[in-house]
Amino acid sequence: MTASNARPQLLMIGPLLPSLVERIAEQYEIHRYWELADADAWVRENGGRIDGIATSGVFGAKAELIEALPNLKAIISFGVGYDSIAVETAKKKGVTVTNTPGVLDNCVADTAVSILLALGRRISEADRFVRKGEWEKGRFPLSGSIGGKVCGIVGMGNIGRAIAKRVEAFGMTVAYHNRRRRDDVDYAYHETLEGLLEAADYAVLVVPGGSSTDKLIGAEQLRALGPQGYLVNIARGTVVDEQALVEALQNGTIAGAALDVFAEEPKVPAELLALDNVVLTPHIGSGTHETRQAMADLFFANLDGVFKQGKAVTEV
Image 1 (cartoon, rainbow, N blue to C red):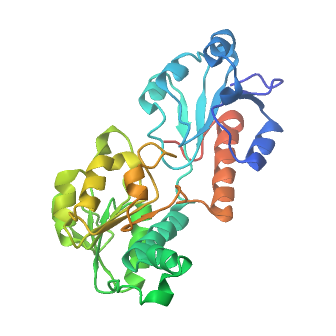
Image 2 (image 1 turned 120 degrees about the vertical axis):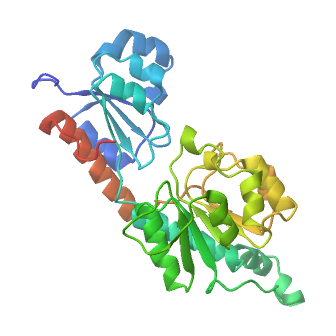
């Protein structure tokens, strides 16, 4: 632990919520990594003073940086995903890694269902139709019903279960694929991803990012989803082979896609922007005032837990 008469030194990788940063600054010394003119030189000279890394699922923490901080005790992350953090490197060094799970489940589930509905009922298309004055020239094309369709959830964790509860309210049937069958849900379980995709009208991706799920959805899986199937991704952009998805959308291999995440955010492929059968949102899964405050509170609880109580609240 840091000496009681000294404020712990934090290396903040990228900008976090201003209110959270202000709160942290009251008790911790913050060094803004993203503002350093020569970050590598600064770390070589000052790395020994750093007690903790403050980051997010967006900014992460690379293995090289973790290795360069000899007295690092903890990596405190804002967000549930931690695939951008070199967790194994941290664990080998005895560095605690935390995230903010649980508090964002409902809002992410709301986002998933919102873009699913927008996709299936062609809401974004209809909005553009009205704005362009096309309604005066004729009626908008029909869409498909949501009720009675199969929602196939890939990853039946807390967020997956929250999505399932919501889509059931719209009259959808839920099926899922997971690493293993869950004993606490009654939904139809498919042992293979392809089996679920073949059965689903809407496939919702809720898996974590990282090497184990990189391009989990490729050309073969999109063919399994089929020309009447829709893909909804609120997981990580890396989970989908983006070029294969573009081709599948262009040639009718699948009916459409709703995407809140992309492989190289904030860059979105021009081919996706040109398509009408997609709904695109800028990674807003947990983007509500209430959820971000709850995430900030848990982030701070982890920070104080490590440096004042000696135990994190939600350790990875």
